[in-house]
Image (cartoon, rainbow over all chains, first blue to last red; front, side, top):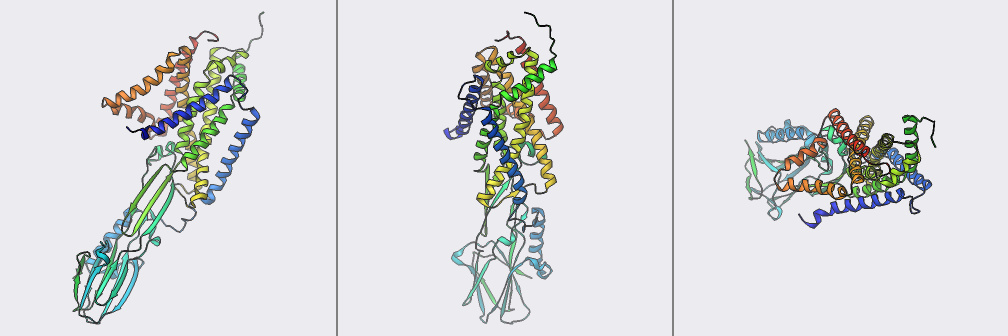
Length: 237
Length: 250
């Protein structure tokens, strides 16, 4: 047990002693005790503050987060699995278009294409490659992403898509620009959460799901694809 | 000199209760002080969670009125101890009184104080919400519908008042013991904290967990109510019995 861990107990003890001392003064009816008038004024002002804040709260409740819809984590897991299965089976067109994050069309006349990331950065996006039936000298890239959620709230619109750059005969994939999200959440007091099944007494529970993202590439029939070790490519049969 | 007037217990109780509400108003100033202090502590948040991946970094700050309720419980404990002290007890001798009316009026005063404490503790959550919103600009509240918020407010006020009442009962018996003999000033904290420490080091943490879990982990509102009422009732009854053994004006 460190000294710091004793600090809260020490603070509480000091508060208890101060509070007890100040109340005891009244018992002895000493001059230092606050007059009835002043106690009433302070208590009245405090009650007024409490009531004003109570009236204000309905107007600020969830303000700024009205655009965020509900997105339960278990629904997101199903969406992610469905997306990967559809891509692996070459049935990506069956996936809802709302999951399309961004599209790219590149004209490409070379015979070989190298796929890698900038500075060998790990790419969490799964890459699926489908060979077209013709050599149309075009590469189509579509980024799909299922919903991301924080505490069952859909935060997909606050995230960024992956970045692609085709230079010479190299397709460079970069992770999305990191979205930094900060939330303030107000939990029920423990004397309520105790009966509502929520975590109680300074305990908290949060859920975070970043969603499933994939990059689906359609490349010309005979294009030779070389992938660097930092990217994992899966060919669609 | 003999008085031929018979004063009923109810009339004495009424007088003593209304006197105590006016005379002990200092305790409400202390309530304001402690709750505002707890609000101040709560503004720093009661917890934080962070998670990060290649594309997203999430930080969640948790706010709640747990500190306020906790501090109000401490306040309940203190006022119950304080009103058993000699200075407060002697106030009752300005009335025609006996131990029963003295204890019952104290009980009524503590009940009123608990309700006020529970109500203000629950309302103070709104102060934290408003300050957090105006300083940080964002706030997600668990309960967004007005009806569920009202239900939770009523539930919270009721259960918080019960928690405070339990602390009052604990404070009242401790205060009464101390009035019987000063050795309890040392003995009670030593037994309580020493007991917790000894049980902890001897590997019997489950006893400690069950001791607190008996009330704090009860998820049924009805059982919680019964447990608090019975425990508080036993504590108050013991205090009443012990105070009956004291000499007048002891």
